[in-house]
Length: 332
Ligand code: NAD
Ligand code: DAU
Image (cartoon, rainbow, N blue to C red; front, top):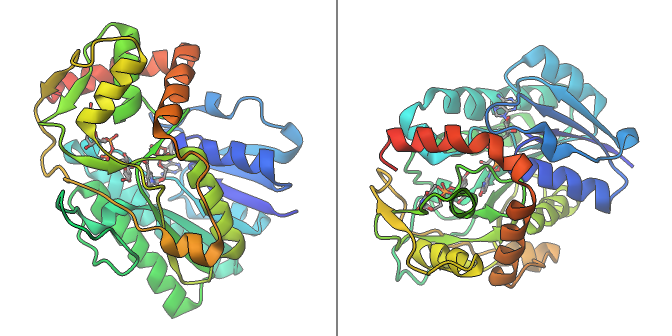
């Protein structure tokens, strides 16, 4: 058994990872989370008290981070400002958390010689044309579009530099769009589901031709655990489950699952700089580390996600109005 420090463990993917680890391994988990608008302690309810503890704090606080890193065997770093739309309104928190926060963690794992896994995004590679036969690989040049993705790209480069210059024992993963339980209602899929549940009209940016490569959060968790256990230090692994779909198809599928007319949504103004398409080539992770996704049926995964939001209004209800007020100010 070993002890993991999971940063951002009260967020969407971090909390799914903590549940996954506690259910599938013997590890002890410490979560470090600032509880920004995106963090939610209710996502960590029901975890075994003898194998889990929560620390409320900021990853840019070097004394706090240093103390915690000394106590653990490995750090799995999810904490971030994660939402593109927010980064277009106020980029500053993205620089602080995504860049300075990652730097602070890297310095601590360097001092204490601890294993580090950095969770990143496919958005660092920019976007693809709809008909491009190529997908992103670990050698695709970095070409981020938004303040969010450029700060994630910066954080990846810091990790690579700390590996090469200081011998830090780190791996990186770049994953595509996640869906599943505990995702904040600002994000595309939960926003549309909760719009229907709240009697609001679902909102599609622009034409909806933009393609995302969907993966269930549990499959992301199993991939990160695989890399943590068996990945090669210094390497970058792309995580994806061959889930390419355009936004128009996804919104119509949600409406159909929820018993609504497939066209019961409205088009709103597009996101500035909106990436057209992401697509992941995850063959390295599959072939070298033997990982395979479990959620290969997107429709089924979407149905269970819809059901989760129907059953958990107490979880998402308190976030909904503030989120929609924020979007309304942007005309979205
Ligand atoms: P999220 O916004 O749901 O959660 C982020 C968490 O980090 C929150 O709990 C928040 O309170 C915490 N946090 C923010 N700033 C912090 C700080 N300074 N100190 C400590 N905690 C802080 O994000 P998510 O969607 O779960 O994404 C998690 C990670 O996965 C991010 O690094 C993101 O770039 C990456 N990622 C996300 C996706 C996706 O589809 N959502 C895909 C690939 C990679
Ligand atoms: O690719 C991985 C990335 O996926 C992560 O790094 C980010 O943290 C995560 O937020 C996500 O980024 P996107 O910008 O792709 O996700 P979002 O849920 O914001 O939007 C998905 C698509 O849906 C995108 O093309 C914009 C569109 N959209 C979004 C919203 C909120 C709409 O059409 N309507 C909406 O209301």
